[in-house]
Length: 607
Image 1 (spheres, rainbow, N blue to C red):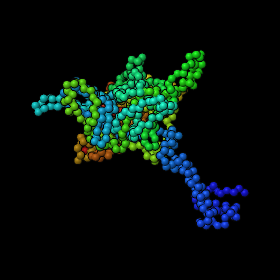
Image 2: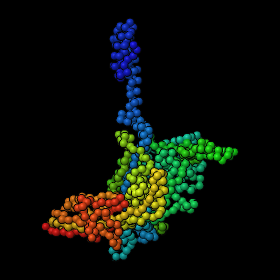
Image 3: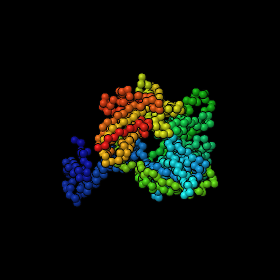
Image 4: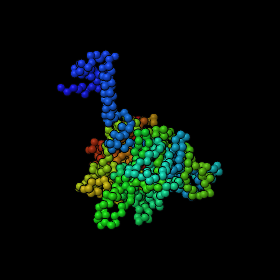
């Protein structure tokens, strides 16, 4: 019989007992006593302690490979990487701010507040991420955000204008990290660890020729692709990604733009890239930048035949995983730091300009404008979040579904189109349907008044087609069409308590219908439950009873010609009883009250 102890023993006491039993059974002549003072007991204690320690470390090793029992943060980060989960960093809160100035003429004196301008709440810094032009009534997204209030003195003479613009600011601060790249630094999958905690994201990385470049490049240089002696690196999801979506240029003459829904969109395209990097956080909260493995140089193969040169270059000059920065150069990393839950501040807390980056159209009025320039956040800053806790990381790993990066289902197409950056013309609403073995995409925009718009410019259509190419299935034929708009009219009959002001109650009923039918609250093809709207109207103070709610499909001059798919009478009144008081939308259709001041009518009776 083999002389061994049970592998089920895990503790010091178990091992000691098993060793004593084995000694008494197989070696009775070597030791007659196992008292604490005996030599045999001492030797067994040593052996049991070694076995106990080995078992403990084996258990710990297994424990750290299991997501439920892992305790070390480094183990969780390792498990996350193995499962394809990218752990996010801290998030900066966002808030709407109103930037105001007193101007004598908004069109000739309106300054341009540039991105990079910082505002402060005292304890937190917030940064402007897009330019604010006081001369323009609309922002880059086609939304009217300028308010002009004339200033009149006691004599009734106009002395100027109080002009304000709305903008979005994000908590945090943009900084630049400089690193000289030596020959010893350049090696496959080179890593650069940024020596600062709480980094939210990398904005851009550029490499400048020369190891002695001490001058920090301008803000625009980090986003330019044409600066001489400067190489820009692009962040990708993984180093195997060989294309990046960016602005398209025609023969180097500039970008292609087009007007859409009151804003300007830019033509984009997928461009092959080899200068790329990925980022990841360490378990101590620092961000690490990882580059590829190629050197970006071609091997001298001029003596071989053209076909053999091509064959050998696939091995010798393989830059598919990205190229490394050149030695004897200087790297500049533009990154954002800050954020976290501490960046969530109250309304009105952001009230100081800590750093101003602005251009003034009238140089003679700079001092007077600077004295009146002010800022205040109109909303509390929200969404600030610290780095995920260990418990959150476990949930990230457990319930993470790796992005498939392909469009298989209809929902995949909708989600992918909505990921198109706004500057390339992201539509307001998207509907997708499968018709006759084709993927048909329906688009709707909004006009300058915030109303639905069916116009779809060719540039937007081309951008979406080009953007979907790497993601759509090879046998999917994609067609893009404008969506349809159904205009509605609401007629309400209600009994109102005579103790309430009639106009106030009627105003609340109209406001309730407008809020419920707000296009921002609905998607294309979404069903609308009229019963829920009736409940909201019935809850209004002063409404005793809702007698009837009639909905009419409005068509004709000034309205969309599209008709609802539900039964209607000659006057366009929708038969809600036949559809259980549900307004049905086709996948290419969206409903809207185009003229609320005319198309919401309320008749009342007092009691």
